[in-house]
Each structure stands twice: as C-alpha cells, then as structure tokens.
Length: 191
Image (cartoon, rainbow, N blue to C red):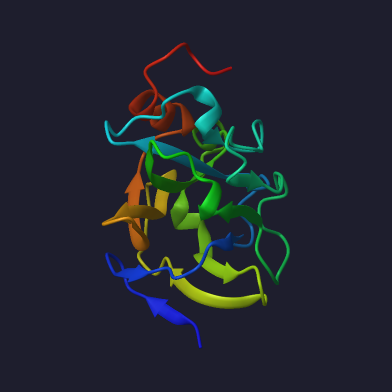
C-alpha cells in the first residue's frame, strides 16, 4: 500500500529502479494552455550540478550516468484527467558516486508572459512507482495554496549513510527554470 506523504516527511526508498511521476491539472477558464515542466537536478556534496549534463529535463532527457531518463515534455499542461503528466525514470544503481541528491522541480513555462501561477493549478502531486511491479510506493499531494508561485520543488531523493531516502519538499518559488539552473550550476550557461 502506498504511503501518503506530508510536507517535509522523509522515507527510506528501498528500491533501485523507480519512476518519479508528476501530475497536475489547470483550473478551467484560465485562458492559455498550461505548460508545466518537470526537471531533475543531480547535485553533488557542494550542492551543485557537476556538469550541465546532470540537469535532466525535456531538452536533456538522459543523465550522463544513464541513471535518469525524462520520458518527454507534456506541452498541453496536464489536460489528461488520469495518469502522470511527466515522468522521470530513475535507476539508483547507476547514479554517479559524486551525486548525493536529486531534486525534482516543476516550473510553469512562460508563467510571467501568460500570467500563470500555481494558484491556477489543482491536483498537483509527485509519486514514486516501483518499476518492477508498477505499484505506487509513495505519493505527495501538493495541498497548499501556492497563489503566486510559478515553480515548486516537489521532492528530493538524497543519500544518507549510503542509503537513498525521499523527502516531500513542497517549497514554492516565484521564479522560472533559469533561477534553479543559476542556483545549482556554476559552469557555462546551459542553452
């Protein structure tokens, strides 16, 4: 049976291969389509992405260690009533030794231009699915009202005492994807 996580709750993963599914639905009558983008930042002990290839998103679907695979962008903004809108497949056995944390962030594409924010989105969640049997292991539903935020750090996988754990973060930001890239990457600008 799946664990329903609360904000800040941490659990042992106990899996090697999993899918991290992210889902959402825009409220009716908001004008433009919503294009929410799921991204994963593979971070080292310095709290930085070692190279730009460790930033996994619709434009870079595979990490260099092949531990993460983004299955593709859903530019329609969660118009499907059922199922995950975007998925990132994870194989923890392949994660590069220098990586200690994997952050899962969802940003609203062109949020300022389209005058969109998380106050116009409902049923947002992150969930972990065991790839061996397709069973949901844990789910965190973003119940808080993020009325002005345009990005949310949904959760993170992190290594502690050589074991991988998951934390439901639920931290909202009034920022775009570029903010997270500049926060976690100090090399040449990612294009």
